Length: 104
Image (cartoon, rainbow, N blue to C red):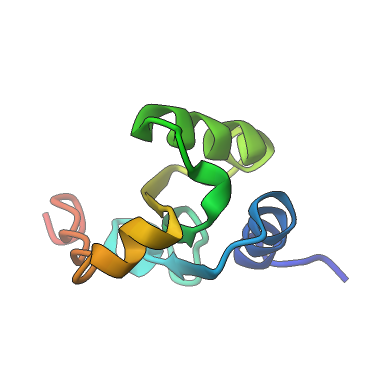
């Protein structure tokens, strides 16, 4: 049985970052792609492993971890990466905007 892309991403993130909170949302339906696509994801990761890292370093770690998926069918990742302390101060994660190409 082949794992869905979303499940593969979740498993890799859980293993690599042992997050306190993890949310992997498939936002492909908001874009001009075929139904049931797994091409656009929004990730919210809360892990103290990111302590002392600049945002760009955090993003680089995730991109490196998911390089195989990004080289395949995953087109876009919206990354929201926090330490536990930052997450407690965060009121919410903003909703992703609709894709311009979706209806145009």
